[in-house]
Length: 108
Image 1 (tube, rainbow, N blue to C red):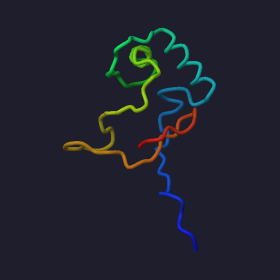
Image 2: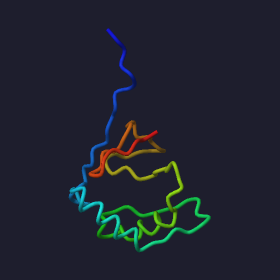
Image 3: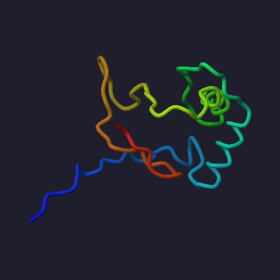
Image 4: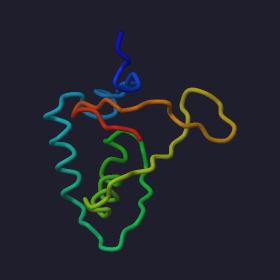
């Protein structure tokens, strides 16, 4: 019997696809493209802080932040609230990837 090649993937499913943002890949890609086009890279940007809510409410604001960051970064640190449990302190998501309508985003 052989050992598995690596840990079993643990995927965070997109529970809000179709409600907070488009679930169809083409529609999501078009929405992102349109929102990101409204912003521009800002040289020297080393960090951004963006809101999270439905794309209808905060997508344009968040997209301007991501556009300012440009495309040269390799890693993002995502901080957010717990919507499902009361926490004291911080928690780390025990997943290996997020599933999105556009594919998997690896978590390291």
